[in-house]
Length: 599
Image 1: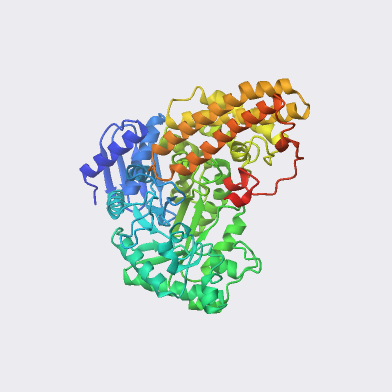
Image 2: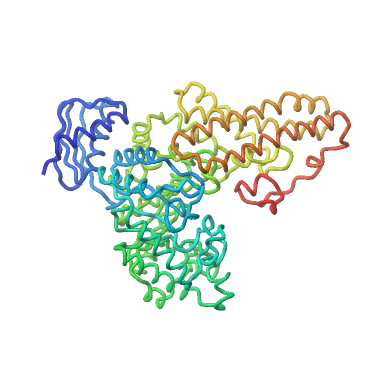
């Protein structure tokens, strides 16, 4: 069966606009299994199994023309029946409908046929007006519009929600008190809870045509230990989880959904260390036998061993309900996508999944700790998933770079310059620490790491100063300038104060601090422009408050230094304290002040 010429023309125009490459000649496209492209510089023949495969064929043809290859002959097949992104819309960033559609276009160009928007509370349930209140939630019409658009591209849009934990955003309101066990966990065995969940799932059924749904249930660490414990006493938590899961799955079945759940709670409860990735974790057979029909989603973006991923996938298969794998494109390390860590963890994971031909593979884009990183800047990570899907376990990372350059228009050299944010160690978040840390307190980054990051930022600045002018590069350039300025300020101030060098401290107060303050103001503006290019205004206030705090504190420090110089203060107490090893984490509230109780 042939694709209609009107359909071919539509997707050809989309790819041409995306890549900036005109595809000459006639395109003939037939609907057949897999993907086949044959082109010798004139007309092209494409055989594709569906619309996303056709779009991938057109994209690969466009790339061949862009790279002046002269001909293209390829045969590919899907190793994952369903593959695509999950975008976190719950950490204060909610992408606009237009931006999600643009994302779908780029997914289709890679041949990816599934999309999830992770929505804890950022969608409308009319019967519960505080659900998603002031959070930029999607209306029913928004989701229906996105679902229809996804269908035109051959993308399955799967609802991705929570039905147990991660519900703090809604449970903060007094209106939700009756269904709250812990501050972020729903109250199991409460009929009010199941009325709420029934209304939720009925609403989602009216928004999506897909009959699959990801119902969450991950990281419910205190389940049954809050209000539930006070009402009912201690209950075996395996039994509690299974009982709740059965109720939720029953609601899903009522509305025609086939549920998927994150698998970690069963593995945590089976571990003596409450560790999802504990090799000794054992889920009892009696628990598995009681499980309803629900696919288990194994999420893991932390390991670098094929053997580990193989072991965990085998353990999931033992549960006998079907396995989904969720990897990750690291967009939650702060300010920049962590491309190195993405590759370090996803290369082995995707090779194992391609060999096993896992049915559904998800590329999660989490926004933990305030959605500081633009997903648009991390979209090149999707090429790892697309190439593993279409080329199999022997996919070439270098090919991913070439695909990403064509997909985004961003040269590899520029993306590598962005990597300087993690130059000291891609496992660390030193740059984030430096940017949010107080200028007077220790920040947990030693001098050697600061020097490494300072040099790397300087090299990145040299590259970015000659890069194309766009929102992403303007943001990256001022980000590295701010990082460099903050390092110089911290280093010079501590050294001068320790030496009692009032003249240098005065110069820092009069010149350096205003310069760094201006850099933070410029970074705030550049980050806001990047945010507004793809996301709704609701939620930006989280980062606005962080920038406001950083700028206000710099002004306060300047005042403190000037008073010390004038002799009004006998010392600067924050700089008098000895630095101790920093064992705290890398989240904003762990970085910005040692006073934990204010948050």
